[in-house]
Image (cartoon, rainbow, N blue to C red; front, side, top):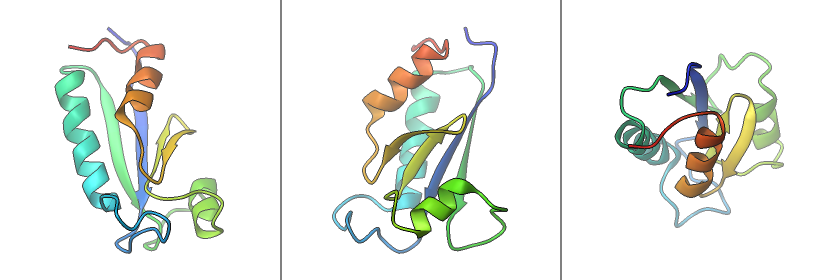
Length: 106
């Protein structure tokens, strides 16, 4: 089992991403990801937070700036400060990153 506590951030907005109109909302993506991680990696320490790109404080967060500048689509998923998904993040990619960090699936 992993000894570290992975930090996952889901960046998003109440407003849908212009390029992602038919995808789930950022908040829905956050809730869906949180539930999926809890099922797949029970009793393993994962911290997941939602960051609203329109509601400070996000204190000079480079991902917020990149999203606001249009360089990254949201919702964006960041694990330990590494972007692993944007627009319509894929569970397979997120799970692969966590397993590289030592997490063991149920």
